[in-house]
Amino acid sequence: MQISKDYLIQKKKELKGAEFLSGFSKDDKIYPIITLTVYFGSEKWDAPRSLKEMFPSDIEDIVLNQIEDYRLHLIIPSEIEDFSIFKTDLGKALKYIKMSDKPDGIKQLRLDENFQQMSVDTIQLINEFTKSNIEIPEEEEEINMCVAWDTFERECTEKGRREGHREGVLSTLTELVEKGILNMEDAASHASIPLEDFKQLIGNASKI
Image (cartoon, rainbow, N blue to C red; front, top):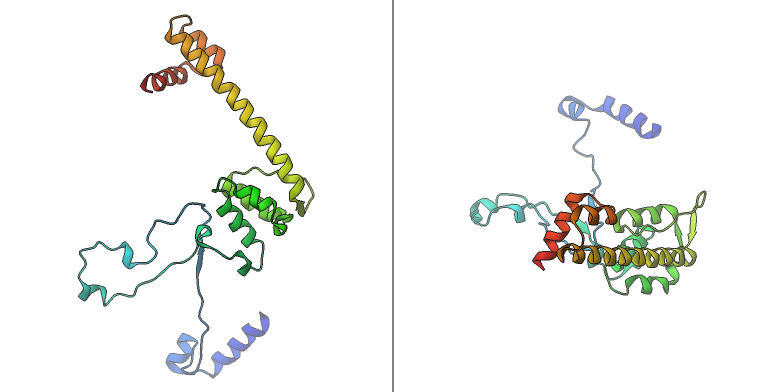
């Protein structure tokens, strides 16, 4: 960095007039920069991909032809077929995001040898955008995904059982209220939810 700064200072001393003000001479060249936008959703991208796509359809061609079209260079998980093009764990994270939306996607990943070990940073990224809640042991930099997925699967199964049990309790209480066996206040108390929430639950059930 210091070499670059020293070079620019020395070079500017050699420039005259307008070139001195701009810091560039007519012989200077610059390298192109491509801005990439990473979309971390599992759904398909359905928004505009360029400036012109954001214009209303009644803009005349004579106007459009005078306007530069700035396109988004998007990285979209659902559109990627070959994740081996990525040289970092970003590829793993994007593949996980894509597969998380498929019925047997996680099962397929468990059989993928590239997913046997993953960095903590990658797991944190996956948890943030897929709400997977994969457990991250303290003071670990690499995670054994075989162990992590076994733990994750047990937690999901237990959560499903708890939610299934709770759904059954709410359904029974709703039925008792509708039959006049139990009043709403007592039912809400048994369900451990606010009375207004239980009233809404009853209202939604009556619409089905």
